[in-house]
Image (cartoon, rainbow, N blue to C red; front, side, top):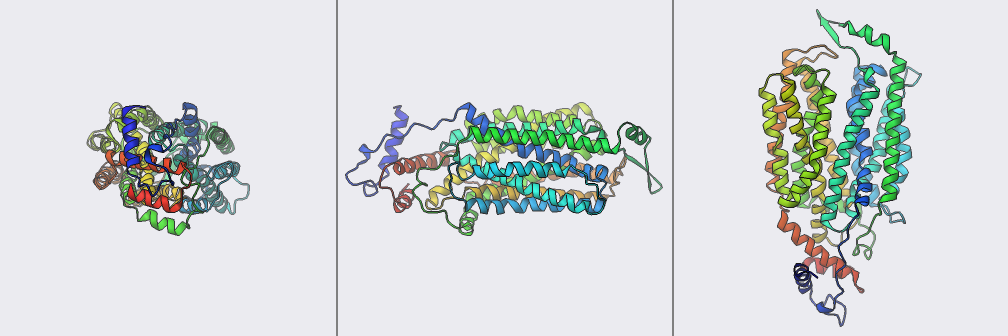
Length: 528
Protein backbone atom coordinates (compact mmCIF):
# COMPACT_ATOMS: atom_id res chain seq x y z
CA UNK A 1 0.00 0.00 0.00
CA UNK A 2 1.34 3.42 -0.95
CA UNK A 3 2.20 5.84 1.78
CA UNK A 4 -0.50 8.31 0.73
CA UNK A 5 -3.18 5.62 0.70
CA UNK A 6 -2.23 4.36 4.13
CA UNK A 7 -2.30 7.85 5.59
CA UNK A 8 -5.71 8.53 4.13
CA UNK A 9 -7.14 5.22 5.35
CA UNK A 10 -5.73 5.70 8.83
CA UNK A 11 -7.09 9.23 8.97
CA UNK A 12 -10.57 8.09 8.02
CA UNK A 13 -10.51 5.25 10.53
CA UNK A 14 -9.32 7.56 13.27
CA UNK A 15 -12.46 9.64 12.85
CA UNK A 16 -14.69 6.71 13.82
CA UNK A 17 -15.56 6.28 17.51
CA UNK A 18 -15.39 2.75 18.75
CA UNK A 19 -19.09 2.84 19.61
CA UNK A 20 -19.99 2.79 15.94
CA UNK A 21 -17.76 -0.17 15.21
CA UNK A 22 -18.87 -3.66 15.97
CA UNK A 23 -18.26 -5.05 19.40
CA UNK A 24 -14.66 -6.18 19.78
CA UNK A 25 -13.63 -4.42 16.58
CA UNK A 26 -11.03 -1.66 16.52
CA UNK A 27 -9.87 0.64 13.74
CA UNK A 28 -6.70 -1.40 13.26
CA UNK A 29 -8.85 -4.50 12.70
CA UNK A 30 -11.10 -2.98 10.05
CA UNK A 31 -11.20 -4.65 6.69
CA UNK A 32 -8.78 -3.44 4.10
CA UNK A 33 -10.46 -0.90 1.86
CA UNK A 34 -11.57 -2.34 -1.43
CA UNK A 35 -9.51 -1.54 -4.46
CA UNK A 36 -10.67 1.41 -6.49
CA UNK A 37 -13.43 0.48 -8.86
CA UNK A 38 -11.97 0.95 -12.33
CA UNK A 39 -14.18 1.20 -15.38
CA UNK A 40 -12.74 -0.26 -18.56
CA UNK A 41 -12.61 1.81 -21.73
CA UNK A 42 -15.26 -0.50 -23.15
CA UNK A 43 -17.59 0.27 -20.21
CA UNK A 44 -17.06 4.00 -20.64
CA UNK A 45 -17.69 3.83 -24.38
CA UNK A 46 -20.87 1.80 -23.91
CA UNK A 47 -22.07 4.32 -21.33
CA UNK A 48 -21.14 7.25 -23.57
CA UNK A 49 -22.97 5.84 -26.60
CA UNK A 50 -26.20 6.04 -24.59
CA UNK A 51 -26.07 9.84 -24.79
CA UNK A 52 -26.26 9.91 -28.59
CA UNK A 53 -30.02 9.21 -29.10
CA UNK A 54 -31.11 12.31 -27.19
CA UNK A 55 -28.68 14.55 -29.07
CA UNK A 56 -29.26 13.10 -32.56
CA UNK A 57 -33.05 13.36 -32.35
CA UNK A 58 -32.96 16.68 -30.49
CA UNK A 59 -30.67 18.23 -33.10
CA UNK A 60 -32.81 17.04 -36.01
CA UNK A 61 -35.98 18.37 -34.38
CA UNK A 62 -34.38 21.61 -33.26
CA UNK A 63 -33.01 22.61 -36.65
CA UNK A 64 -35.53 21.09 -39.07
CA UNK A 65 -38.97 20.67 -37.44
CA UNK A 66 -40.01 24.28 -38.01
CA UNK A 67 -39.23 24.32 -41.73
CA UNK A 68 -40.79 20.85 -42.06
CA UNK A 69 -44.08 21.97 -40.54
CA UNK A 70 -44.27 25.15 -42.63
CA UNK A 71 -42.97 24.04 -46.04
CA UNK A 72 -43.45 20.25 -46.18
CA UNK A 73 -46.47 19.49 -43.98
CA UNK A 74 -47.83 22.95 -44.96
CA UNK A 75 -49.15 23.78 -41.51
CA UNK A 76 -50.11 27.44 -41.10
CA UNK A 77 -47.57 29.54 -39.18
CA UNK A 78 -49.76 30.22 -36.13
CA UNK A 79 -50.67 26.57 -35.37
CA UNK A 80 -47.06 25.63 -36.17
CA UNK A 81 -45.84 28.06 -33.51
CA UNK A 82 -48.31 26.55 -31.03
CA UNK A 83 -47.01 23.04 -31.81
CA UNK A 84 -43.42 24.12 -31.24
CA UNK A 85 -44.10 26.08 -28.06
CA UNK A 86 -46.44 23.53 -26.43
CA UNK A 87 -44.07 20.71 -27.33
CA UNK A 88 -41.14 22.54 -25.74
CA UNK A 89 -43.16 23.41 -22.62
CA UNK A 90 -44.41 19.83 -22.27
CA UNK A 91 -40.85 18.56 -22.70
CA UNK A 92 -39.72 20.68 -19.74
CA UNK A 93 -42.67 19.55 -17.60
CA UNK A 94 -42.05 15.84 -18.19
CA UNK A 95 -38.56 15.91 -16.65
CA UNK A 96 -39.63 16.34 -12.99
CA UNK A 97 -42.64 14.10 -13.69
CA UNK A 98 -40.42 11.27 -14.92
CA UNK A 99 -38.00 11.99 -12.08
CA UNK A 100 -40.86 11.51 -9.63
CA UNK A 101 -41.87 8.19 -11.22
CA UNK A 102 -38.27 6.93 -11.21
CA UNK A 103 -37.85 7.86 -7.55
CA UNK A 104 -40.80 5.57 -6.76
CA UNK A 105 -39.35 2.68 -8.77
CA UNK A 106 -38.00 -0.42 -7.09
CA UNK A 107 -34.71 -2.14 -7.80
CA UNK A 108 -34.91 -5.07 -10.22
CA UNK A 109 -32.40 -7.51 -11.64
CA UNK A 110 -31.69 -4.92 -14.35
CA UNK A 111 -31.39 -2.11 -11.82
CA UNK A 112 -33.70 0.80 -11.05
CA UNK A 113 -32.94 2.96 -14.11
CA UNK A 114 -32.27 0.48 -16.90
CA UNK A 115 -35.90 -0.77 -17.23
CA UNK A 116 -36.98 2.77 -18.09
CA UNK A 117 -34.37 2.98 -20.84
CA UNK A 118 -35.21 -0.46 -22.26
CA UNK A 119 -39.00 -0.17 -22.38
CA UNK A 120 -39.19 3.44 -23.61
CA UNK A 121 -36.95 2.86 -26.63
CA UNK A 122 -39.33 1.01 -29.03
CA UNK A 123 -42.20 3.42 -28.35
CA UNK A 124 -39.91 6.43 -28.76
CA UNK A 125 -38.71 5.41 -32.24
CA UNK A 126 -42.30 4.80 -33.41
CA UNK A 127 -43.48 8.23 -32.29
CA UNK A 128 -40.34 9.88 -33.72
CA UNK A 129 -41.02 8.35 -37.13
CA UNK A 130 -44.67 9.50 -37.03
CA UNK A 131 -43.60 13.10 -36.37
CA UNK A 132 -42.07 13.14 -39.87
CA UNK A 133 -45.06 11.47 -41.55
CA UNK A 134 -47.60 13.63 -43.40
CA UNK A 135 -51.10 12.21 -42.83
CA UNK A 136 -53.54 12.09 -45.76
CA UNK A 137 -56.33 13.94 -43.97
CA UNK A 138 -56.01 17.76 -44.20
CA UNK A 139 -58.18 18.45 -41.18
CA UNK A 140 -56.57 17.73 -37.83
CA UNK A 141 -52.97 17.72 -38.99
CA UNK A 142 -52.11 20.15 -36.21
CA UNK A 143 -53.41 17.70 -33.58
CA UNK A 144 -51.44 14.86 -35.22
CA UNK A 145 -48.12 16.68 -34.95
CA UNK A 146 -48.84 18.08 -31.48
CA UNK A 147 -49.80 14.63 -30.18
CA UNK A 148 -46.80 12.74 -31.52
CA UNK A 149 -44.35 15.56 -30.73
CA UNK A 150 -45.48 15.57 -27.08
CA UNK A 151 -45.50 11.75 -26.94
CA UNK A 152 -41.99 11.54 -28.31
CA UNK A 153 -40.70 14.19 -25.89
CA UNK A 154 -42.24 12.21 -23.01
CA UNK A 155 -40.68 8.93 -24.13
CA UNK A 156 -37.25 10.39 -24.85
CA UNK A 157 -37.38 11.93 -21.36
CA UNK A 158 -38.05 8.43 -19.99
CA UNK A 159 -34.76 7.51 -21.67
CA UNK A 160 -32.66 10.57 -20.93
CA UNK A 161 -33.49 11.29 -17.26
CA UNK A 162 -32.58 7.77 -16.03
CA UNK A 163 -29.57 7.77 -18.34
CA UNK A 164 -28.37 11.05 -16.81
CA UNK A 165 -28.90 9.69 -13.29
CA UNK A 166 -26.99 6.54 -14.28
CA UNK A 167 -23.79 8.55 -13.85
CA UNK A 168 -24.09 8.02 -10.09
CA UNK A 169 -24.47 4.23 -10.46
CA UNK A 170 -21.72 3.21 -12.86
CA UNK A 171 -18.96 3.72 -10.26
CA UNK A 172 -18.45 4.99 -6.72
CA UNK A 173 -15.18 6.71 -7.71
CA UNK A 174 -15.35 10.42 -8.53
CA UNK A 175 -12.47 10.20 -11.00
CA UNK A 176 -14.09 7.32 -12.88
CA UNK A 177 -17.42 9.16 -13.09
CA UNK A 178 -15.65 12.28 -14.36
CA UNK A 179 -13.81 10.24 -16.99
CA UNK A 180 -17.02 8.50 -18.10
CA UNK A 181 -18.74 11.90 -18.31
CA UNK A 182 -15.98 13.16 -20.62
CA UNK A 183 -16.53 10.15 -22.88
CA UNK A 184 -20.26 10.83 -22.80
CA UNK A 185 -19.93 14.50 -23.71
CA UNK A 186 -17.64 13.64 -26.63
CA UNK A 187 -20.18 11.17 -28.01
CA UNK A 188 -23.05 13.61 -27.44
CA UNK A 189 -21.29 16.32 -29.41
CA UNK A 190 -20.62 13.75 -32.14
CA UNK A 191 -24.33 12.89 -31.98
CA UNK A 192 -25.16 16.53 -32.61
CA UNK A 193 -22.85 16.56 -35.62
CA UNK A 194 -24.35 13.27 -36.84
CA UNK A 195 -27.92 14.50 -36.47
CA UNK A 196 -27.15 17.68 -38.38
CA UNK A 197 -25.26 15.84 -41.13
CA UNK A 198 -27.84 13.07 -41.66
CA UNK A 199 -30.87 15.34 -41.66
CA UNK A 200 -29.16 18.06 -43.68
CA UNK A 201 -27.78 15.80 -46.40
CA UNK A 202 -30.91 13.72 -46.88
CA UNK A 203 -33.47 16.52 -46.83
CA UNK A 204 -31.30 19.28 -48.23
CA UNK A 205 -33.62 19.55 -51.22
CA UNK A 206 -36.45 20.46 -48.85
CA UNK A 207 -35.16 24.01 -48.44
CA UNK A 208 -37.94 26.35 -49.51
CA UNK A 209 -37.13 29.20 -51.89
CA UNK A 210 -36.96 32.64 -50.38
CA UNK A 211 -39.52 35.33 -51.14
CA UNK A 212 -38.93 38.83 -52.43
CA UNK A 213 -41.16 41.38 -50.71
CA UNK A 214 -42.24 44.03 -53.23
CA UNK A 215 -44.71 46.76 -52.22
CA UNK A 216 -45.79 44.77 -49.20
CA UNK A 217 -46.54 41.55 -51.09
CA UNK A 218 -44.40 38.42 -51.32
CA UNK A 219 -43.43 36.81 -54.61
CA UNK A 220 -41.34 33.72 -55.13
CA UNK A 221 -37.81 34.20 -56.41
CA UNK A 222 -36.76 32.75 -59.72
CA UNK A 223 -35.09 29.83 -57.97
CA UNK A 224 -38.49 28.61 -56.76
CA UNK A 225 -39.49 27.08 -60.09
CA UNK A 226 -36.09 25.44 -60.52
CA UNK A 227 -36.28 23.99 -57.00
CA UNK A 228 -39.69 22.44 -57.35
CA UNK A 229 -39.12 21.29 -60.92
CA UNK A 230 -36.43 18.87 -59.67
CA UNK A 231 -38.04 17.77 -56.43
CA UNK A 232 -41.75 17.31 -55.86
CA UNK A 233 -43.37 17.77 -52.49
CA UNK A 234 -43.91 14.01 -52.22
CA UNK A 235 -40.22 13.34 -52.78
CA UNK A 236 -39.39 15.85 -50.08
CA UNK A 237 -41.78 14.12 -47.67
CA UNK A 238 -40.15 10.78 -48.46
CA UNK A 239 -36.72 12.30 -47.81
CA UNK A 240 -37.81 13.31 -44.32
CA UNK A 241 -39.15 9.80 -43.69
CA UNK A 242 -35.85 8.29 -44.85
CA UNK A 243 -33.90 10.58 -42.50
CA UNK A 244 -36.26 9.65 -39.66
CA UNK A 245 -35.67 5.96 -40.35
CA UNK A 246 -31.89 6.34 -40.30
CA UNK A 247 -31.94 8.33 -37.05
CA UNK A 248 -34.40 5.86 -35.46
CA UNK A 249 -32.00 3.02 -36.33
CA UNK A 250 -29.13 4.88 -34.63
CA UNK A 251 -31.38 5.35 -31.56
CA UNK A 252 -32.02 1.60 -31.30
CA UNK A 253 -28.37 0.61 -31.82
CA UNK A 254 -27.17 3.03 -29.13
CA UNK A 255 -29.82 1.82 -26.67
CA UNK A 256 -28.81 -1.81 -27.22
CA UNK A 257 -25.10 -1.02 -26.70
CA UNK A 258 -25.89 0.89 -23.50
CA UNK A 259 -28.04 -1.92 -22.12
CA UNK A 260 -25.52 -4.66 -22.87
CA UNK A 261 -22.37 -2.76 -21.93
CA UNK A 262 -23.29 -1.01 -18.65
CA UNK A 263 -24.25 -2.56 -15.34
CA UNK A 264 -26.10 -0.41 -12.84
CA UNK A 265 -24.55 -0.63 -9.36
CA UNK A 266 -25.99 0.12 -5.96
CA UNK A 267 -24.21 1.99 -3.17
CA UNK A 268 -23.10 -0.42 -0.39
CA UNK A 269 -24.71 1.66 2.36
CA UNK A 270 -27.94 2.12 0.39
CA UNK A 271 -28.73 -1.59 0.27
CA UNK A 272 -29.35 -1.60 4.02
CA UNK A 273 -31.72 1.38 3.98
CA UNK A 274 -35.48 1.36 3.95
CA UNK A 275 -37.55 2.29 0.92
CA UNK A 276 -36.69 5.67 -0.67
CA UNK A 277 -38.37 8.70 0.87
CA UNK A 278 -41.35 10.35 -0.75
CA UNK A 279 -40.74 12.44 -3.85
CA UNK A 280 -41.93 15.71 -2.34
CA UNK A 281 -39.87 15.28 0.80
CA UNK A 282 -36.84 14.50 -1.36
CA UNK A 283 -37.63 17.49 -3.57
CA UNK A 284 -37.72 19.81 -0.55
CA UNK A 285 -34.35 18.51 0.63
CA UNK A 286 -32.80 18.77 -2.85
CA UNK A 287 -34.06 22.32 -3.39
CA UNK A 288 -32.81 23.37 0.04
CA UNK A 289 -29.30 22.09 -0.73
CA UNK A 290 -27.29 25.26 -1.25
CA UNK A 291 -24.57 23.96 -3.63
CA UNK A 292 -27.23 22.55 -5.98
CA UNK A 293 -29.18 25.82 -6.17
CA UNK A 294 -26.00 27.83 -6.82
CA UNK A 295 -24.82 25.38 -9.47
CA UNK A 296 -28.07 25.34 -11.48
CA UNK A 297 -28.44 29.13 -11.11
CA UNK A 298 -25.01 29.68 -12.65
CA UNK A 299 -25.58 27.20 -15.46
CA UNK A 300 -29.09 28.56 -16.07
CA UNK A 301 -27.59 31.88 -17.20
CA UNK A 302 -24.75 30.36 -19.20
CA UNK A 303 -27.11 27.83 -20.84
CA UNK A 304 -29.47 30.64 -21.80
CA UNK A 305 -26.53 32.47 -23.38
CA UNK A 306 -25.47 29.53 -25.55
CA UNK A 307 -29.08 28.71 -26.48
CA UNK A 308 -29.64 32.26 -27.69
CA UNK A 309 -26.65 31.79 -29.99
CA UNK A 310 -27.85 28.34 -31.09
CA UNK A 311 -31.45 29.39 -31.73
CA UNK A 312 -30.53 32.42 -33.85
CA UNK A 313 -27.35 31.12 -35.49
CA UNK A 314 -28.98 30.15 -38.80
CA UNK A 315 -30.82 33.44 -39.16
CA UNK A 316 -27.73 35.41 -38.14
CA UNK A 317 -25.56 33.66 -40.75
CA UNK A 318 -28.22 34.03 -43.43
CA UNK A 319 -29.34 37.63 -43.00
CA UNK A 320 -26.79 39.53 -40.91
CA UNK A 321 -23.59 37.98 -42.29
CA UNK A 322 -25.02 37.07 -45.69
CA UNK A 323 -23.74 33.45 -45.64
CA UNK A 324 -26.98 31.70 -46.63
CA UNK A 325 -25.20 28.62 -48.01
CA UNK A 326 -22.57 28.31 -45.29
CA UNK A 327 -24.78 27.65 -42.26
CA UNK A 328 -24.33 23.86 -42.15
CA UNK A 329 -20.58 24.14 -42.69
CA UNK A 330 -20.20 26.71 -39.88
CA UNK A 331 -22.28 24.54 -37.56
CA UNK A 332 -20.12 21.54 -38.45
CA UNK A 333 -16.98 23.57 -37.62
CA UNK A 334 -18.39 24.46 -34.20
CA UNK A 335 -19.36 20.88 -33.35
CA UNK A 336 -16.14 19.31 -34.59
CA UNK A 337 -14.13 21.85 -32.60
CA UNK A 338 -16.18 20.99 -29.51
CA UNK A 339 -15.68 17.27 -30.09
CA UNK A 340 -11.89 17.50 -30.31
CA UNK A 341 -11.54 19.81 -27.29
CA UNK A 342 -13.68 17.90 -24.77
CA UNK A 343 -10.73 15.60 -23.86
CA UNK A 344 -8.60 18.72 -23.36
CA UNK A 345 -11.17 20.17 -20.96
CA UNK A 346 -11.33 16.85 -19.12
CA UNK A 347 -7.56 17.04 -18.59
CA UNK A 348 -7.82 20.71 -17.63
CA UNK A 349 -10.48 20.19 -14.93
CA UNK A 350 -8.50 17.25 -13.53
CA UNK A 351 -5.33 19.32 -13.41
CA UNK A 352 -6.64 22.72 -12.33
CA UNK A 353 -10.09 22.03 -10.85
CA UNK A 354 -13.65 22.30 -12.08
CA UNK A 355 -14.36 25.85 -10.93
CA UNK A 356 -11.27 27.09 -12.75
CA UNK A 357 -12.40 25.19 -15.85
CA UNK A 358 -15.78 26.95 -15.64
CA UNK A 359 -14.19 30.40 -15.52
CA UNK A 360 -11.68 29.74 -18.30
CA UNK A 361 -13.86 27.60 -20.57
CA UNK A 362 -17.10 29.57 -20.60
CA UNK A 363 -15.50 33.02 -20.50
CA UNK A 364 -13.34 32.13 -23.52
CA UNK A 365 -16.38 32.72 -25.74
CA UNK A 366 -16.67 36.39 -24.73
CA UNK A 367 -13.75 37.87 -26.80
CA UNK A 368 -14.94 36.10 -29.93
CA UNK A 369 -18.54 37.22 -29.43
CA UNK A 370 -17.24 40.79 -29.14
CA UNK A 371 -15.27 40.28 -32.37
CA UNK A 372 -18.42 39.10 -34.17
CA UNK A 373 -20.32 42.15 -32.91
CA UNK A 374 -17.69 44.59 -34.19
CA UNK A 375 -16.49 43.04 -37.43
CA UNK A 376 -17.89 43.33 -40.93
CA UNK A 377 -19.03 40.22 -42.78
CA UNK A 378 -15.95 38.08 -43.43
CA UNK A 379 -16.17 34.35 -44.09
CA UNK A 380 -12.63 33.44 -42.95
CA UNK A 381 -12.98 35.32 -39.65
CA UNK A 382 -16.41 33.75 -39.17
CA UNK A 383 -14.89 30.27 -39.47
CA UNK A 384 -12.17 31.20 -36.96
CA UNK A 385 -14.84 32.45 -34.54
CA UNK A 386 -16.88 29.26 -35.10
CA UNK A 387 -13.92 27.05 -34.20
CA UNK A 388 -13.17 29.16 -31.12
CA UNK A 389 -16.84 29.05 -30.11
CA UNK A 390 -16.70 25.25 -30.30
CA UNK A 391 -14.00 25.27 -27.60
CA UNK A 392 -16.33 27.10 -25.24
CA UNK A 393 -19.30 24.93 -26.26
CA UNK A 394 -17.25 21.86 -25.23
CA UNK A 395 -16.78 23.31 -21.74
CA UNK A 396 -20.50 24.14 -21.51
CA UNK A 397 -21.34 20.55 -22.55
CA UNK A 398 -18.94 18.84 -20.15
CA UNK A 399 -18.86 20.84 -16.92
CA UNK A 400 -22.50 20.70 -15.70
CA UNK A 401 -22.61 16.91 -15.92
CA UNK A 402 -19.18 16.64 -14.33
CA UNK A 403 -20.11 18.89 -11.37
CA UNK A 404 -23.57 17.48 -10.60
CA UNK A 405 -22.19 14.22 -9.11
CA UNK A 406 -20.04 16.30 -6.73
CA UNK A 407 -23.16 18.10 -5.51
CA UNK A 408 -24.94 14.76 -5.00
CA UNK A 409 -21.98 13.37 -3.04
CA UNK A 410 -22.07 16.45 -0.81
CA UNK A 411 -25.82 15.97 -0.34
CA UNK A 412 -25.37 12.30 0.63
CA UNK A 413 -22.91 13.27 3.36
CA UNK A 414 -25.25 15.88 4.80
CA UNK A 415 -28.37 13.72 4.35
CA UNK A 416 -27.10 10.12 4.75
CA UNK A 417 -30.61 8.77 5.31
CA UNK A 418 -31.93 10.25 2.03
CA UNK A 419 -31.69 7.82 -0.87
CA UNK A 420 -33.31 7.61 -4.26
CA UNK A 421 -32.94 11.37 -4.84
CA UNK A 422 -30.50 11.14 -7.77
CA UNK A 423 -33.24 11.32 -10.44
CA UNK A 424 -34.57 14.48 -8.76
CA UNK A 425 -31.18 16.17 -9.04
CA UNK A 426 -30.76 15.32 -12.71
CA UNK A 427 -34.38 15.77 -13.83
CA UNK A 428 -34.69 19.24 -12.34
CA UNK A 429 -31.37 20.31 -13.83
CA UNK A 430 -32.66 19.21 -17.24
CA UNK A 431 -35.96 20.96 -16.49
CA UNK A 432 -34.21 24.27 -15.82
CA UNK A 433 -32.07 23.83 -18.93
CA UNK A 434 -35.15 23.30 -21.09
CA UNK A 435 -36.80 26.22 -19.34
CA UNK A 436 -33.87 28.35 -20.47
CA UNK A 437 -34.38 27.01 -24.00
CA UNK A 438 -38.04 28.01 -23.91
CA UNK A 439 -37.16 31.48 -22.63
CA UNK A 440 -34.58 31.96 -25.39
CA UNK A 441 -37.12 30.84 -28.01
CA UNK A 442 -39.73 33.28 -26.71
CA UNK A 443 -37.30 36.21 -26.44
CA UNK A 444 -35.95 35.63 -29.95
CA UNK A 445 -39.36 35.28 -31.59
CA UNK A 446 -40.84 38.34 -29.90
CA UNK A 447 -37.76 40.44 -30.62
CA UNK A 448 -37.67 39.53 -34.31
CA UNK A 449 -41.41 40.07 -34.67
CA UNK A 450 -41.10 43.51 -33.08
CA UNK A 451 -38.19 44.33 -35.40
CA UNK A 452 -40.28 43.54 -38.49
CA UNK A 453 -39.06 40.08 -39.55
CA UNK A 454 -40.26 38.99 -43.01
CA UNK A 455 -41.11 35.29 -43.22
CA UNK A 456 -38.91 33.46 -45.76
CA UNK A 457 -37.60 36.78 -47.04
CA UNK A 458 -34.52 36.86 -49.25
CA UNK A 459 -33.34 39.83 -47.17
CA UNK A 460 -34.41 41.54 -43.95
CA UNK A 461 -34.71 45.14 -42.76
CA UNK A 462 -31.72 46.71 -41.00
CA UNK A 463 -33.61 46.55 -37.69
CA UNK A 464 -33.88 42.74 -37.96
CA UNK A 465 -30.17 42.40 -38.76
CA UNK A 466 -29.29 44.54 -35.75
CA UNK A 467 -31.64 42.54 -33.50
CA UNK A 468 -30.05 39.28 -34.63
CA UNK A 469 -26.58 40.67 -33.90
CA UNK A 470 -27.67 41.64 -30.37
CA UNK A 471 -29.26 38.23 -29.77
CA UNK A 472 -26.10 36.40 -30.88
CA UNK A 473 -23.46 38.66 -29.31
CA UNK A 474 -24.30 41.22 -26.62
CA UNK A 475 -27.13 39.37 -24.86
CA UNK A 476 -25.08 36.14 -24.47
CA UNK A 477 -22.09 38.14 -23.18
CA UNK A 478 -24.19 39.72 -20.42
CA UNK A 479 -25.70 36.33 -19.48
CA UNK A 480 -22.28 34.64 -19.39
CA UNK A 481 -20.91 37.33 -17.06
CA UNK A 482 -23.92 36.98 -14.75
CA UNK A 483 -23.50 33.21 -14.68
CA UNK A 484 -19.80 33.43 -13.84
CA UNK A 485 -20.61 35.87 -11.05
CA UNK A 486 -23.00 33.32 -9.54
CA UNK A 487 -20.32 30.62 -9.78
CA UNK A 488 -18.27 32.64 -7.29
CA UNK A 489 -20.84 31.53 -4.69
CA UNK A 490 -20.50 27.82 -5.54
CA UNK A 491 -18.83 26.27 -2.46
CA UNK A 492 -17.46 22.91 -3.72
CA UNK A 493 -13.85 23.51 -4.75
CA UNK A 494 -11.12 20.88 -5.14
CA UNK A 495 -10.30 20.82 -1.41
CA UNK A 496 -13.97 20.25 -0.55
CA UNK A 497 -14.19 17.49 -3.17
CA UNK A 498 -11.21 15.68 -1.62
CA UNK A 499 -12.74 15.90 1.84
CA UNK A 500 -16.06 14.56 0.59
CA UNK A 501 -14.32 11.72 -1.25
CA UNK A 502 -12.45 10.67 1.90
CA UNK A 503 -15.60 10.82 4.04
CA UNK A 504 -17.69 8.87 1.53
CA UNK A 505 -15.02 6.19 1.23
CA UNK A 506 -15.03 5.76 5.00
CA UNK A 507 -18.81 5.49 4.90
CA UNK A 508 -18.65 2.81 2.20
CA UNK A 509 -15.94 0.85 4.00
CA UNK A 510 -17.97 0.85 7.20
CA UNK A 511 -21.10 -0.17 5.28
CA UNK A 512 -19.25 -3.20 3.93
CA UNK A 513 -18.80 -4.56 7.45
CA UNK A 514 -21.62 -6.36 9.28
CA UNK A 515 -23.90 -4.87 11.88
CA UNK A 516 -24.33 -1.55 10.04
CA UNK A 517 -27.56 0.26 10.83
CA UNK A 518 -29.36 3.37 9.62
CA UNK A 519 -28.60 5.14 12.90
CA UNK A 520 -24.92 4.33 12.50
CA UNK A 521 -25.03 5.86 9.02
CA UNK A 522 -26.44 9.13 10.28
CA UNK A 523 -24.00 9.33 13.21
CA UNK A 524 -21.01 8.39 11.07
CA UNK A 525 -21.76 10.95 8.37
CA UNK A 526 -22.35 13.61 11.02
CA UNK A 527 -18.94 12.95 12.60
CA UNK A 528 -17.17 12.89 9.24
